[in-house]
Length: 173
Image (cartoon, rainbow, N blue to C red; front, side, top):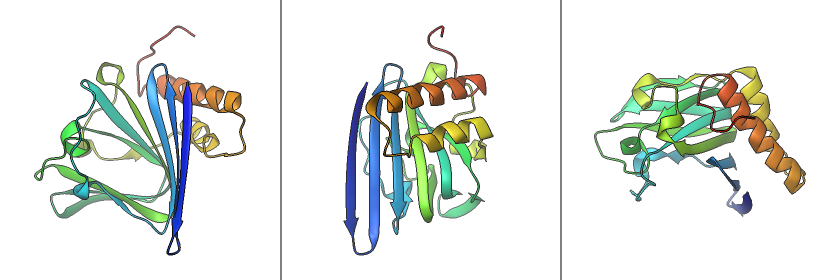
C-alpha cells in the first residue's frame, strides 16, 4: 500500500487529498472548502483499461446533469458509479456531475470494472450511502491515523462495499 497526501490553500479556499494505492483499488479522498469540482471541465486522460470509478459523497452536495440540464441533486451521503465517457474520457454529450457544498468530503474508489455490482453510469443517478459504508468512509478523513491504521481503514471500506453488494469480493478474507 502507498499513501500520498497533498494540501493547498489560497484565497479562502482549501483542498486536502490523500491517495491510497491498495492491492485491489485506488482510493482517493478529497476534502474541500470554497471549491467546486465540475466534471464538465475535465481534460480527458487515458484511463486504465477496464476500470470504473465509484464515488462516495460523505459530506457536501452532488449535482448530476444531462448536458447542461440538472437531473438530480443530493445533499445527503450517497454513491454513484461513473462511466469512462463521463469522467476520464469525457465526451461533450455525456452526463456530468459536480460537487459543491461546505465542506465537501468525497472518495473516489477506482477498481476493475468486473468487480462493480452496481449499475455504471450517471443515468442511474446517486443512491443513498448505507450507514456502515458511510462510517468506514468517514474514518479515512481522520488525518491523525497512523499509516497502519489507515491501511486497515482502507480494507474496512472495501469490505463494507463488498458486504453491501456494491462490489464483488476479490480475496477470501
